[in-house]
Image (tube, rainbow, N blue to C red):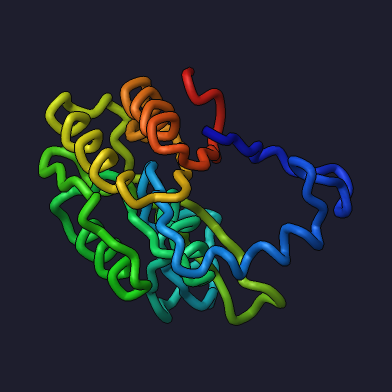
Length: 217
């Protein structure tokens, strides 16, 4: 099993695991056709954009006239999209709810060519969604006014965890690398971390992690 560090270099030309920037860039084309597992917390980023027209009489806030709404895959879906853009074969493993946000997120993964047979649908758990309210039109740059997070932080049920582990093991048969992406929403826990370490050892898979904090906290 091989490990990499997510810690960013302090200087652009600093070597990372014995490879300098030029060597890393040269290695990117070799990702084409490689099977990569991305395990972690899936998020849907929602953007509601409006044109600021005046101040509200009800509170010192701007009134926005709706312009558009769009969605961007977030959390563990973000690195999955990046690997897919580099022509890697991506196996996404995570949890979504049986809701509109979950359907939107899964469809975006399909459109990016990401394999979704590793997704577990939990009808009792909403898909994590981050909604950003953006004002534009009268400003030089669009301005984010607020963000509303819809998130369930309760631990995953044991049946859901068991399903995740089974899908991880199934995807690991052909995988060359495993990325664990932790956004503290429950998918990355002691069970999935232990299973990731185990399959990486068994199959000599490159294992790397991107965490918002202590993986074992």
